[in-house]
Each structure stands twice: as C-alpha cells, then as structure tokens.
Length: 188
Length: 214
Image 1 (cartoon, rainbow over the protein chains, first blue to last red):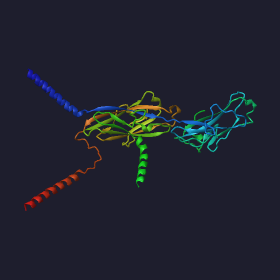
Image 2: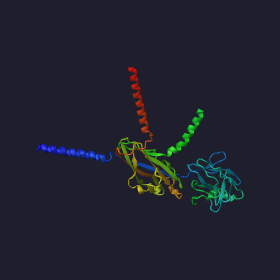
Image 3: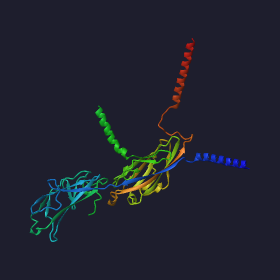
Image 4: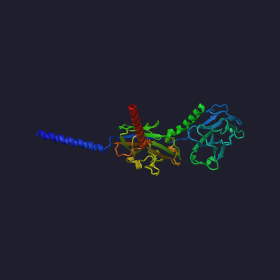
C-alpha cells in the first residue's frame, strides 16, 4: 500500500516536472516595465528696459528737477534677455499730477527715426532684436518745452513713462518689412 | 599640418554636438534589469524629449529615440510601449500641443500615435515595437506640433507626460532568423581556404616523409 502511494507520488512529481519543462518552452523568461517621464517646456519672451544718463549711470528713479527749456539726458534702450528673437514696440506716456493740466507737448524727444518707426501711437523697432542684443536708443534727450511749461507747472511733477511690447519673430512673417504688420501684438 | 587637423576635428565636434544632444535612447540591459533612459533633464532623470524644450508657437520639432536591446545573445525580447498621458497639472498646456509617434524605419508614414500630447489615444494599450535580438534597435520618431495660435497664458510652462516601456524575454530558438549583425563573413570561401590549407599541409607532410625515407 505504502509502496503504491510512493509510486503515485513519484509519478505525479514526474508529470509536474515534465509540465514545467514544456511550460518553459512557451512562456517568456522575464518581463519588466520602465517608466519615462518626458518633459515639454514652452519658451517665453523677456526683455529689460534700460534708462540711463549720457554718463552711463542709471536714470534716477526719484526723477530730476527741471526748469522750462532744460534738456535732460535720458537714454532709453531695450535688451533681449531671452533665447528667442522678437519684434518690439515702445510707447511713451506723459503725465502730470494735476488734473487741470496736460503733459502733452511739454516734452520733446529726439526719437531715433533711423531705427524706430512711429505707427498708431507706438514706436516700432524696424529690425528683429536677437537674443542678447540691445537696441539703439529710442531717444537720448528730453527737452522740456519752454513755451508749454509755464508758471502753472511750478511745483508739479511731470512724468514720462516708457512701456514696451514684444512679439516673437519666429514663424511670424511681416509685410513690406514693416514690423507693425507682425501677428500677435498684445491688446493695449 | 597637425594644427589644421586639430581645427578640423574641433569644428567637426562643434557641429556634431548639437545633433548628438538631441538624440535620446531607451536601453534594455537584460536579465529583467531596469531600462536605462538617456539623456534625462533637470526636470526628470528619465526625460526622452531634449528636443522639446523652450518650444514656441509655430514650432514643429522632431525627437529621435533609439530603443535598444543589450540583453545576452541567448534571448530575444519583445519591446512594448504605451502612453500614460499627462501628469496632473500638465493637461491644460499639453492638450494644446500635437504629438505624433512612429517607427522611423517604417516609411509608410503610419503613426502609432497621433493626438494631443496630453492624451493616451492609440497608445492606451501596449503596442509592440518589435522583436529584438541582442544588439537590435528600433528607432522611434516623435513629432511635436505647437500651434501658432498658442496664447501667452502658455508661455513659460512645463508639461510632464509619462510613457511606459515593457520588455518580455524569450529564449532564442534554433529556427529563429539570424539577426543582421553587420558581419559579412563569407563562410563557404573561408571553409574552402581552410580545406585548401589543410590539403597543402598534408601534402607537405607526405612529401617530407617520402624525402626522409629516400
């Protein structure tokens, strides 16, 4: 009886071993999975507006005292600080801290018309500003117009604010070399 | 002369570096070891998309990925790919971008994936890239399309999308085709030369014996 049981166990074990061999012939040896986390990043347009004096020092943030007829040195340039070329436009906004007065016509700027083109309130840089490049001065001097700045302006603060917009030049063709025809200029 | 060679070498290196930098690879080393993903990036050590950085509206960029089997010669492997889609927080940005994937050797232009980058689409389930013997490769071509209308709100964004690779090892069978190894060994010619050399040796040996007897 015991011998018969042993024989059965041996027979079953043999069958199991044979099945294992056959199974190995059809199954894969190993299987493994690996995960890759892929990253896509989008670029951005960045620039800095530099405002300096003709001595090369930064234009004083607190402003300067002026009298009618003064010519103030203020050199405004824009530097491309990103890795993409772009088109550029600049706007000059005038202000005065008195509601009854207007700052329009109080300033006279020596705009560099060779590099900047005026179109609908903006000065457009005529070329593409490449990465790391700085524009020529938009203007370098501001004249306080004596005929306009009369006694009413005594003690008042006149302001001149330069703002700029940029739009990528890659995949953005222009018409007739006019940079203002580029697509994507931000809404004001 | 040596200086000219140095200059040419440096120039060649300079021109080849940007190309090399854009390549990426997935390598299976065998014995159920892990996959090795290169080159990686500062954002992810397993990043396979070095070409898709700092993308701009209107860009159409290509990333080549080499999937390589470096397991032992006793096994062949089946390599599969599937997409897990965009990670949480990346869906908005990646849904704006088009992504296409195909095996570069397949000239039929049939893409195994053609959808928004945030989706899993045709790669929701495992897709077999091929059966590779030791040293075998599959070249994948991934195309990213950034619409020119992509808005300012997506500038300076980072999107993460996950892919999974799976490998199954099988023993190499006797009736398996010989994998192309690049070896142009002309077996019949070399056996003929071997036979001829053996015949000459025997002939010389016999002649020498006869001369000794004489």
